[in-house]
Image (cartoon, rainbow, N blue to C red; front, side):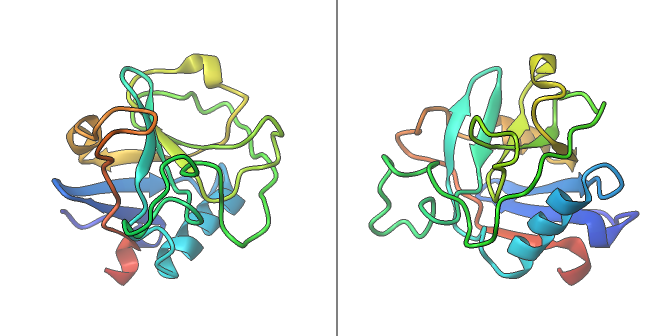
Length: 168
């Protein structure tokens, strides 16, 4: 890992294969960026699995309610929860869903994003204007590409730890 231009707005996601660095976009999506930092600082993302990983599309994770702590993990529930914090209003922008961007997962309600997010494997412009983009992978995209596929994967990849670079 390198020194980051803005360590307060850089997230380090430790995977089994190495660390992925994500630059948040607080100027574009301030509430989503703050939420990710808050959950990271509380350790809420540590151990959470990637519960929905679709080849050529994206890898989704962040269900802090049902997606972590291996023992007793019920893969049927993974992806159905969020955090104990309130849902966030949409912060749609003109930022496209390009390869490596981080988007806020949500239900059909545009204002239902909470803790879950996805990383785009490819340019997914059909999502533009419908999901909040609030970050971009700046290091380690090859590690994201290696996350086991499935809905859910038979042996899901997991975020070992998630930290704000300033605190690491």
